Length: 168
Image 1 (tube, rainbow, N blue to C red):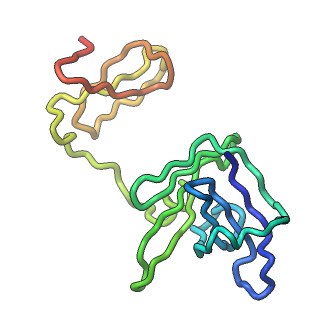
Image 2 (cartoon, helix red, strand yellow):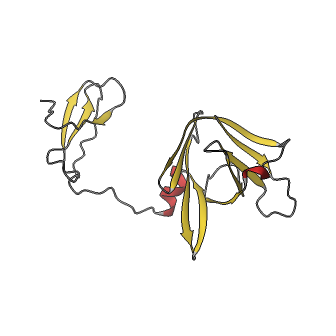
Image 3 (tube, rainbow, N blue to C red):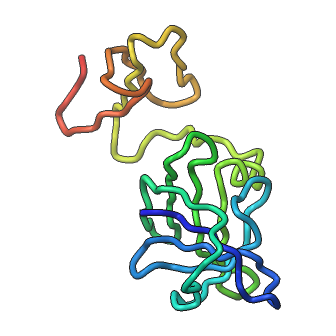
């Protein structure tokens, strides 16, 4: 499973790259860049048969995950940096549009966004588990949750929700 970016063979196109995502029969988009570094990139969906027989590949990266979640396709690439991105299907000015964004571009689009502080719906006693090996754990002071310290097999923080279960 690979993410492929090739040079668009159409010289009249204003979008110089073709992006191929291995979802369903293979989704192909025309786009203006090889990665959404500073801004979200506009993507124009095209039929899968527009992918050339002998493409001039610019970027070939193995994918760890390619999952469609509602109006978005989440991509996780198998590389150290610039490894997460998302294709978002939306409506702009009354027309369907697709934008390719990374966490950095999403944060730049809405810089003042805050994490919700309301209590989790339907969970009266939400507990956040912080790894006991974490030297200075985050306290989650603004959240309406209890922080419990215990050894975690992976990661630094976690949530466990199971009816009737308590880590105490």
